[in-house]
Length: 219
Image (cartoon, rainbow, N blue to C red; front, side):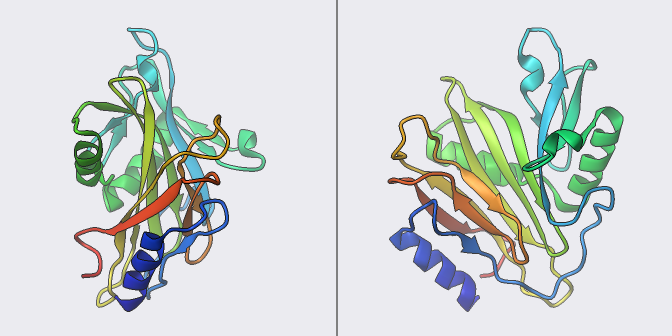
């Protein structure tokens, strides 16, 4: 609890997004079941294929413990983020089974995502276009990229520890916002795989990170 509070206080006074990251306190936790993926890697989840109306396939339908694509000819794809990512693409039924097996265990943070969009953007209308998934022995995290009604794309991250019985759980929201020094850059969240993992913002400038402890984590 003390370490988590310290993280929140440090972030509240501001960090340079490209240089500072937020490490999550390690707990005595158990291994997550995602055996078909490499441990401690980041994966991008999206929908591929085609639907009518044109362009609608790119939107992921998010349930409380499942992801689906909007039509039969549109399918889930999972791709490794980083070097040699083109060599590690899983799609169709394999991707659907693998990702939804993991989500059945850990959930999708759907309520937290809805609450964030409602409170920050004053709307309940949005479409998820991409999810960046981080899974490893002790932690599970999702970065949602979503499109609002005006066409603007935003993002937010959620992370929780996978605690054993008696361990103090961690559950938090990470949000990067503000302008970047480069006009073409976007202020977004990014995973830094490790044990424990970290989250950081993607650009320099006034882009800053806010961390919020969520119900279900440490009090």
